[in-house]
Length: 317
Image (cartoon, rainbow, N blue to C red):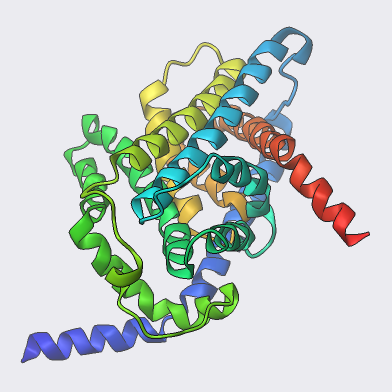
C-alpha cells in the first residue's frame, strides 16, 4: 500500500516539474558558464595555432567530421530498415546529410521534421515518426557504451551500458508505448492524424537487436571524437590524455544531445566538457580546442548541406 502511494506521489511530482523550462535554464546556464570562463581567462587564451603550418591537421579534422555525418546517416538508414521499411534506398543517406544543418536552427527539431516528412512520403507515418524519434536514443546508447570505457577509472561507469538493454525487439515496444503519451502534441507538430491503432500492426521490427544501426552510431561518435582530438593535439601536442578526453567527450556529447534546447548541443557540450575536465588539463587548451572543433564540425555541416540551403533559398524567392 505504501509502495502504491509512493509511486502515485512520484508520478504527481514528475508531472508538476516543467522539464521544458529546466532544459532552457540548463542551456542558458551552460552558455553563461562558457562565456564567464572566456571573459575570466581572456588573457591566457590564444587562438593562434599556425594555420599555415597545421592546415593539414585542420583539414584532417574536417574530413573526420564529414565522415561522422555520413556514418550517422547510414545509422539512420539502418534504423528505418529495422522499423520495417525493407526497400530503403541510399536517398535516405543523402537526405539525412543534406538536412543535418537544421539541427542548429532554434528549436532543435526541424531536422527531425524534414526527415519525418521524407520517410512519411515513402512509408507510413508511424514508421516515420518512431524511427525519427528513436534515432537520438541510438546515438545516446552508443555514446554511453563508449563512455563505459571509464570503467578503467571507476567500476561504476559500467552502468552507462544499461541503455543498450532497451535496444531489443521486446523492450523497444515498451519504449514506443511510452512515446504514445507524447503523440498528442508531437502528432500536431508532425501533422499526423491521431487515429487509434496497434503499434505492432504498423511497425514490424526486422531483427531482435539493431546491431548495424548501433555500430554505425558508434562509428559516428568515434569519428567525431577523432576530429576533436586532432584539434586538441594541434593545440597541445605534448599532453597524452587520450582515454580521459575520450570519456569526457562521450559524456559531454550525451548531455548536449539530451538538452534539445541547445541547437546542435552548442554551449552545453562545451560547458560540460570544461566542467568535467576541471584542473586535470589546462582549461585554456581545452577551450581553444573546443572552439576550433565547433567551427570545423559546423563548417562540415554547412559544406554538405549547402545544396539543401540553396534550394530552400531559391524556393523562397
